[in-house]
Length: 503
Image (cartoon, rainbow, N blue to C red):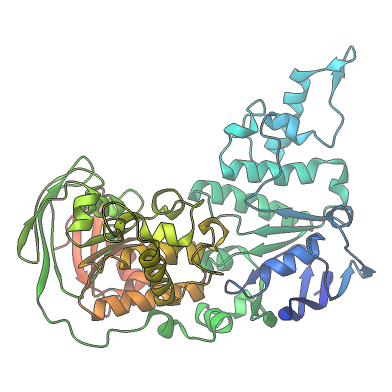
């Protein structure tokens, strides 16, 4: 392997805390290289060193065989390093074409900008990169996050400095992208590879890593622990390298048999999306919801919580229950962790403490309507400890936390109600493997204490690893209800593709 970029002995500490401890990394030309590790492993700090944003305590850096130094973002750019992330530096008020030509001379006619020619050139450039679906005259502010990312990469390839662009660093690029947008990004990454560029792909999504990348470097506790060809590496090995735990340990296992006491009975649940849903749930049982996109998994959870209206006959612990609204459901012992935690589950500008307290303000009030801040803070700290939240304190702004820790805040809020029934929509999405392990652990703990759990997930391994039974949906209809034990991912996927009720 011919090294394009070589990083050796990267060290960085803050106030005596060693964040990077002699980290090493080798990137080759025409390679997509994954960088993996739990939150806090040191990935972000390493990227900041390469970007010239943070000064290293020590760093030996070689580019194309020659020693180099990076002391600023300007120097990193001049050396050909490009950094693509969610906080994209585009000019939202300008058009796609104008953003593409920021580093190029605009075509002119009679001394004035030839806008027609500018858009034509931009259209040709976009077509050459396979992203012709983006109109060149559209304002950047109107583009999706995914398309903004594609334009950012395209601009790096087309600008005056494009000849020197040899290393692209993509930090969690698909975190906010749809599957269609992710597919377009992957095609563009393949083009970068064909041009001889090295792509450092930072992600915790194992399915993307194995589909897209050639090699992987794993970091843990500020150190490089392994660098391997992905063709010679398995998912279990990667998880073990990142966390020091096996896949089986991540999911855990049921410690005691279900007591067969009925918690929930749902009969004839219907709305615009769902048709005739019927099932029962035992106390402490974990029921999975599986199905293809658009199957109705999320809609079923929302109907049970009262977020979406439905007709139904529901009995909760033997008593008739009507899901009029989320407030009524909270009062009856239901808790909901939504899929879109950043928009539906959290107020990012609020502190951890305030986010945990939001649905429970009545319980935290003292005399009259005055909020008992002491009680609120004490409860928030206890719940944060329970879910192993990694934050400076409960006063920290939620927007400053990692994805995994934001998810833990939503869980902590749900746990504050001591729910009888917990509804989870994609509980492991957008979090690293270590945070998933924590989340799965307290799902198991709640289950062992008798809380019924219904979880929707597109991760088949997650469903099979955690659930007792799995309900399969297709276009809002119930197709099958099966035991998870002994079922393979292939079996479950086959059921998801069924369009008729299983015999």
